[in-house]
Image 1 (tube, helix red, strand yellow):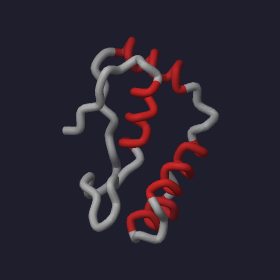
Image 2: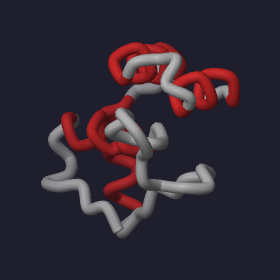
Image 3: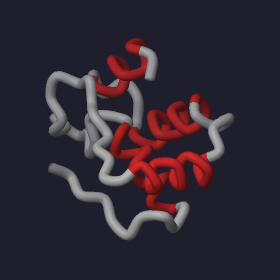
Image 4: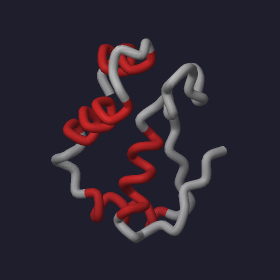
Length: 85
């Protein structure tokens, strides 16, 4: 996710739906079903975040795009649940 988009969201200048839409646009060329199958075949996997703080502040419900990606991967049906550590 480009820093300008992340910063705009974290500063409250961008809504969650717009943030999520922009992220989904960025990854739209990736076959999520194929990615999910590859991840599942690899064994236990963790999605890591480069954000300084994983917990959202203010009105934001999420602070990084890995939550969005985790939910997209879950929607493929390859995974039963998302566990946030």
